[in-house]
Image (cartoon, rainbow, N blue to C red):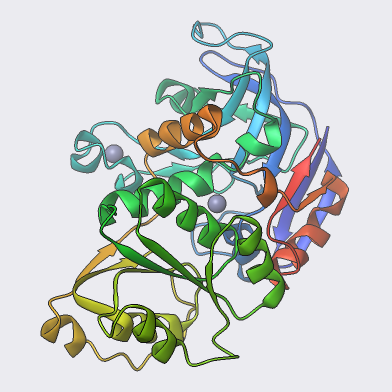
Length: 344
Ligand SMILES: [Zn+2]
Ligand SMILES: [Zn+2]
């Protein structure tokens, strides 16, 4: 089989590998679609302390079962499945609370195990057992299903923020995660949704999704505009979906008293921020962090896609082949595409 193997920092090669065979408890998938995430780009460009190379990256995976090991009775050949990439231990304090994304022994497909940038993927027995495989309904394409994981991460954020119809929500960044968060806020009935994005073509994408309050901070004074629309009150919820430090700072200024701040997007290493944290004190703001997603968020995200409550078709801006995966990583880096999916 062909696989895109990361052998060193910025050393990615398409290699011929043996198709893995199933041992007891394992499931072999033929990968059908795997979306590229900024995390893949980070691993490719900078490596990672815990990433052991060589490794096949890719954790936003959808595929079809081609073989099952002995003892596997929940899945059979021909099942279309989406992979929830986190493999948790199931018995640490966080797993027992249902917060398996914080599991002390968490392992991730495409990081600790080989991932989806390959024609076949062996799902380890512990992963099969912990329920990482979710059935894709027949009407949902593999490419759409590969968007489940980023949607699940967004759900994790929004669950903490508890957005209701009385909330005005401000989202920084109209990339894939920004739009997913905006769509979820809309599903929660948010009164007004503001999307801030300096790239015009991304604002146009957001417009295609019907978002009316779009702002380019390079073209107008964001603070003045938001304050004018909200009668000098500010917004109830801010979610930076981009690693820009300015988003964090102006987000805190734009929150109304009692507002909620979603710390969804990590900051770039070495980013020094001058943030006035006294704003948290004076305005009684609440900060919520969100990191990855639980297996429950994953299932919930897939059912949102399956029911049509959330449609990601317009987010699938670029589909590429496995040979083009390095090109795809560069598209993510230069923000030239809203999303890039490797399709097989
Ligand atoms: Zn991801
Ligand atoms: Zn655990």
